[in-house]
Image 1: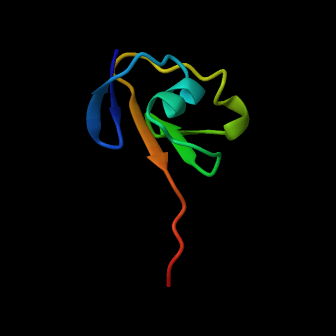
Image 2: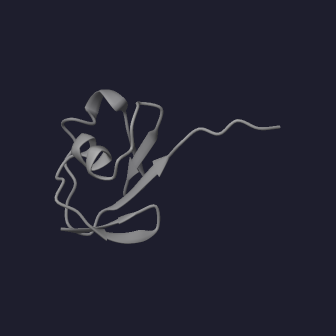
Length: 65
């Protein structure tokens, strides 16, 4: 299925947030995920489905000063 991840169109097999992170090789749990501008709490990653055409934003924390 085709979705947009961080502004880039991608063909993915994943149908849920947790499997998408694995497919895209994101490791760990320190991410903020939004689908179509709605934030998805980490506790719901395994149950939140992704649909054709969805816009997914995967944000990682940064440290700096």
